[in-house]
Image (tube, rainbow, N blue to C red; front, side, top):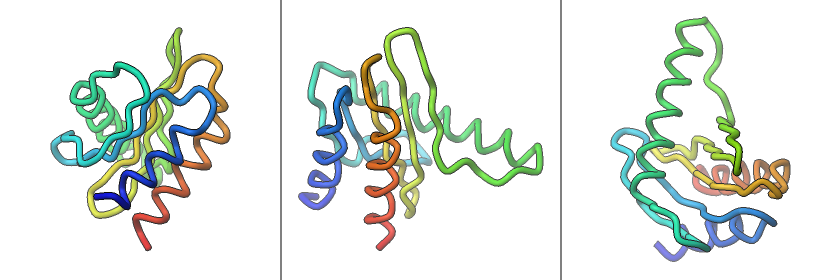
Length: 116
C-alpha cells in the first residue's frame, strides 16, 4: 500500500492537483488516496469509475479504441482518469489553475508503474 501512496503523492505535487486516488474500475471503490484538501473520496471515486466506464462503452459503440485519458472540465476545475491495469484507475482532481498537461503526464507515469 505504501507503493500506491508514493505514486499518488507524486501526482498531488503537481501545481493545482487537490487529490489523487486509485479506484477500482468495477465498483468505484477507493483502493488508495492522497487528498490534499477536503475532498469526498468515496463520491469522487464513484463518479470517476462511472464516467470512465460510460465513455469506454461509447467509444466501443463507435468502433473507437478506449481512451488513454478521460478529462472532464468544469467551471472550478477538472477530473482526470487514466487506466492503470488490474482493474484500477488513477484519478486526479484539479483546480482551475492546475497544470493539466503535467498532471496527465504524471497520471500516465503512475499508471505505467502500476503495470510494471
